[in-house]
Image 1: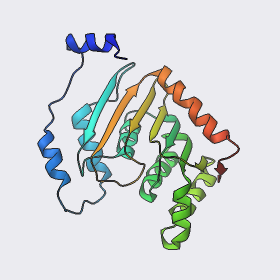
Image 2 (image 1 turned 90 degrees about the vertical axis):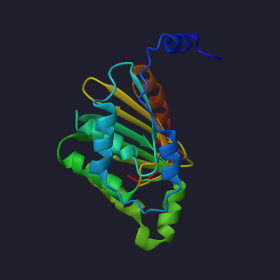
Image 3 (image 1 turned 60 degrees about the vertical axis):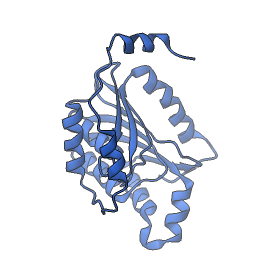
Image 4 (image 1 turned 90 degrees about the horizontal axis):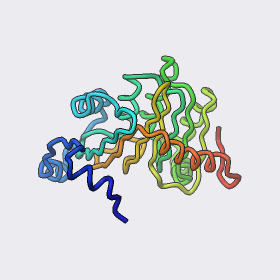
Length: 214
């Protein structure tokens, strides 16, 4: 069913759309260039694009080209503007560099409570390759910081960030790891949507079938 209110808003041109070079994104995706992780560059790109996080009931819809930015850059973008009290991340896989960024923010006093839901496939694959045992490393950080970490049959990518005055929601195709592919993001500040997804996170965290590792 089409939401007539949204259709009317488009007709009145109340949605601001930044100019986007689709051809450049597609062409970049074909490149075989090896792209190194650079969080500062990613955040700079977001700041140039957005200037500031969304205000109440505001939504940003973003396509990031290959080598653009990932989920962790949006979290860092929020942290550069305000402290995060509660951070919920549902992802298929978590990277070592990404958990280090969250850990640094925790010790800087900019991030408090963290709840992570990842796929049980990450646990199995990491444990089968001891030198890539990121999950054990991530688990240890969560235990030290008293964060929650559970794994289940998960493929969703949702991030919730509660600050003193805002309720941010990021719906994305991007995992919480280093991923230079084309990704899409809905970045919004809607309390009711935050509360809707919060019910899912609480169920995943408290579900007896999930394996809690923190």
